[in-house]
Every structure is written in C-alpha cells, then in structure tokens.
Image (cartoon, rainbow, N blue to C red; front, side, top):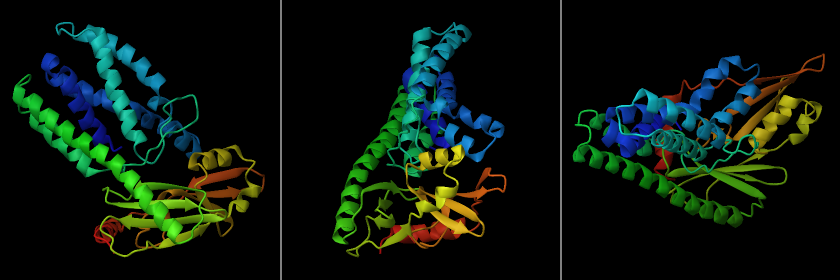
Length: 337
C-alpha cells in the first residue's frame, strides 16, 4: 500500500492501543512502526541489478521473522525511553508487532506479492484492493489529523478514532466480498464466450474498487478484460496476448531471467523489439488497458544477450505524462459501457 496509508493506519492503531496511556506518542510510534517494513526501500541504491531490486522488495523486511525480532528489540528500547509511562516492555512490543503485521496484511491485499514466510520464497497477494485507494485511506487520514487537535485520553478522541478505523476496515471487508463477486462474473463470462482457461487472476483497476480486470491463461496465451459494476452490455470484450514463451530459450539459462519469470508467477508474455526481447509482466496490466489494448504494460523488461553471452536486463521506462487523460478515461470507463 501507499506510504501515507501505512502511516495513518499505524497512527490510528497506535491511538487505539496506547493512546490513553502515552498520548500523541502513540500516534507517532504507531505511524513509525506501521511504516518499518518499508525500510527495504532504503537499500534500493545498493542493489546491483533491477532483478535484485524486484526480488528484495517486500521480502525479509515484510516477514513474520522480521516483525517479531524488531518488536522485541523496539519494545525493550521504548520501555527504557519512556519509563514514566505505565507501559511494560511486553506491551510496547505487542504494540509494534501489531502495527507491523497490519502493514504486512495491507501489502498482501495488493498485487505485488509479500514474502511473509521468509526465507520461504512464496509470496502472498490477495489482490482485493489497489495500492492507492482513497476510500480506505481518507477516513483514517481525516481522523488522525483531527485527533491532533483533541485532548489526549478524551472520550471524543477515542470515539473519533474508532469511527475512522471502522469505516476503513469495513471497506476492506467489502473489497474481499467484491472480489468473490467479480470472480464469479468473470468466470461466467469467460465460459459464455467459450474461452477455455487454465487459471485466472482478478484485481481492481487503479484508485477504486468498482472496475476490475481479469487475466485468464490459456495454453498459448492470455485474455485480458475489464468489467465495471455499472456495465450494461452483456459480454465483456477480451483482448488476446500470445505467450511467446519460446522466445526465452536463448536466455533462460541466465539466473536473473529465471528469477524474473518466477516473480511473475507465469503471468508474462514475450515480444521481440529490434534486437531485444521484451518481457511484459501481465500482473499489473497496462497504463490504460481499458481504453487502449495495444498500450504498454506498466512493468516490462528488456532482455538482451551480449556477444560474450552475458544477459542484460533493463526495465522499460514508463511515461505517465498523459496521466490526467488516463484518469479521465478511467472515470468514463468506470461509469460503464
């Protein structure tokens, strides 16, 4: 999730757990603890390849092992720093652990994948909410800012915080229910159009939870389609993308190519562009695929085999200069077709 979401969620949870005992310090340390798993971003400049950056993002620092270790150490440290407060080291540790676990869950709810059980390589992604969703974040942002102007420990402050948390987490629950509904809709439509798929994945389009996309895998390719709850036409149009996985034969020996493919969980399609290969990670869709099925995918990687046999991988630069236009088209598409 977006960093602002983690900050305000951590602050709200902090107020809920220890606000009555430590006042605004609960908001501060809650926000900090709720952001700690993203410490991996600080090491980005030290990665030697784009694949390393991808592999280690949401890796160790988003694991249960990391959360448990940091919670114990920070719990002991906070107890020493704030001896005047009636909060034991165990309570401080639980406070930190809960905030870090909520951060990890929020990231699991999005598309990227989170290595919760590190060192096991499996990544969890539920894909029920977009990485930036104002409906989840705004209630918490408003209530956290409002609380800063209220007396610590007051009933009004506690009730306001509860309202923000209830609104945000009820919405989170609705996104999970919505995903189940959307899954059934896409399955019925794919079967109705005689698209024989082996597996599929669904995820919300940017910034909302009304319009969703599906990527359905067949033997030779993928079908991608979009559906809004406001759609009135009976059948969703699906666009076909051939796998072209055979194009990787000349570079599949390379360790980074294997790691990159593993990250996509098989949801990738290959292209040839000039003298290079282009691997499109289909999990994140296109910039405005609901409007332009021929547009660039958000995450694509050029793979080039040098004369000495070494393989170079570079991420394709993605221009968002037409973001304003894309948002307008998104709004129009959400209204239905």
